[in-house]
Structure formats: structure tokens, C-alpha cells
Amino acid sequence: MGIASINLKAIVAASIAFVMISVAAQAQEADLNDESELLEALVMADPAEAKRLERQLQALWSKSGSASADLLLKRGRDAMEAEDYGVAIEHFTALTDHAPEFAEGWHMRASAFYNAQLFGPAIADLERALTLNPNNYTAMLGLGHILEHINQPELAYDAYVRAQSIHPHHEDVSKAVSRLAPQVQGKSI
Image 1 (cartoon, rainbow, N blue to C red):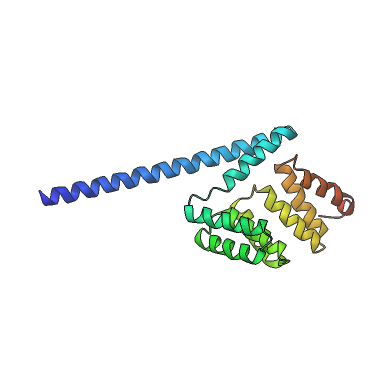
Image 2: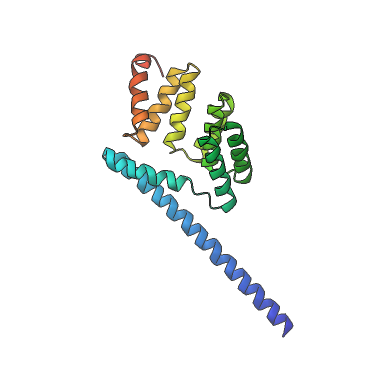
């Protein structure tokens, strides 16, 4: 009877683990479907609809799936809002250590580095963020800003054009493309 009870407990535990993994995989798949649908709609949207879709995408990209990661993200964003970039970098570093596959952590730490005038680390973090989420037009916009700041207008323009292809109605992206187009037209990019 004792062995049967142990086997039953093991079977129940294995079944619960399987169900939990399946539910998590389905939720992640649903998020991916939502993201691709939102991105497709964003390209075709009018400017008012684009703002709504942008908010939904930002909310989706801010989901870490971990309460502790969410707390670190919130604390880092709060520090950014208070313009305490050193503290923000600390929180976002803890976040990237805790959740290295969470693109928004890298993106936000890049923003903190940028605001602290640490452009090399900001570029490295944006590269990581864009590797994890190549559709993050705000990370591309940030990369363009840095490249423009360090006098790389052709590369900045490329980043802005890529961001615009994902979010054609983003006002800052459109302004940046218009601003740099005269500088880079006629040059090989």
C-alpha cells in the first residue's frame, strides 16, 4: 500500500507539472500570436488606432512572467522617472541578471545608460534587446538617437527606417527619418 501511495503521488505530481508547463506554453504562444497580430494591425492602422495598439504592445512587452522581475522593472522605471539613473541602472542590472531573456529589461537599462551618458553600454544593451525582440521599435529609435549623437547619421537613419517600417505612425520616428533623409540621401547606406 505504501509503494502504491508513493507511485500515485509521483504520478499526480508529474501530471500537475505537465499541465502547468502546457498552460505556460499556451500562454506564451497566445502572447506571440497577440504580438504578431498587434504588429500587423499597427502597420495598417490610422494614427489614432496606432496609439492604442502601441499601448497594447508596450504592455505586452513589459510582461516578464515573474513577480520579482516585475518589481525590479517598476523600481527601475521609478528611478528613471526621478532621474536617478545610477539607481535605475542598478535595478535594471539586477533585472537582466534575474531574467536575461526578458528584452524589456535590456531595453530599459539601455535607456538608463543613455541618460547617464554611457553610450557604449547603452548600444550593447540595445543590441541585446533587439536580438531578443527585433520588433521593438522604441529600442530601434533609441539606437538611432545614440548613433545620431555619436555622429553616425547613416546608421542612425537605418535604425529609424527600420523602426518606421514597424510603426509608421510613431511621431518621433517620422521626425527623425525626415530630419536625416537629406543628409544620407545619395550616400551609400
